[in-house]
Structures are given as C-alpha cells and as structure tokens.
Amino acid sequence: MSEYLILGTIIVAALWYFNRDRIKNKFYPNQPKNLTIDQKFNSEKRDREKEIDKLLGKMGKNGINDLSAKDRKRLNELSKK
Image (cartoon, rainbow, N blue to C red; front, side, top):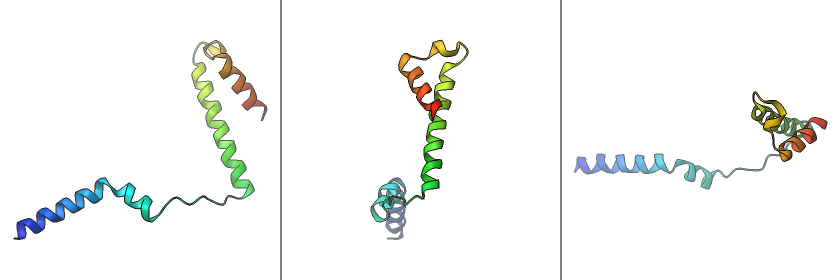
C-alpha cells in the first residue's frame, strides 16, 4: 500500500512540475502594468537601443553593405529618435 502512495506522490509531483507554467498562468494571469510616463519612455528607449544593437551587429565586418535597404532605412529612422 505504501508503494502506491509513494508512486502516486511522485506522479503528482511530476505532473505539477511539467505543468507549472500553465498552472501559474491560470491562477496568476499576467496583469498589464500601469507604467508611469518615465517608465514607458525608458522601456521604449531600451527597445530602440536593442533594435539598433541588433542592426549594428548585423553589419559585422563589411560595414553598411551587409544591411538590406529595409534595414538601412530602419537604422536611419531609429538613429533620428
């Protein structure tokens, strides 16, 4: 009898472990954050900087020639902000 109890406990723990994200999202859904103006500005700035870094990393050793026309246009738009 105790073997079944141990086996059942292990199965329940394994099921919980593999479904923990789904369980968490069901009981604690992500709430939209109420950001202040400064927090929103800083968040947008970080996103722009990440995109610029990605585009600059894409340039690599060959310079601007590695970027497509679309990427060059986006880099110009981001650099003006």
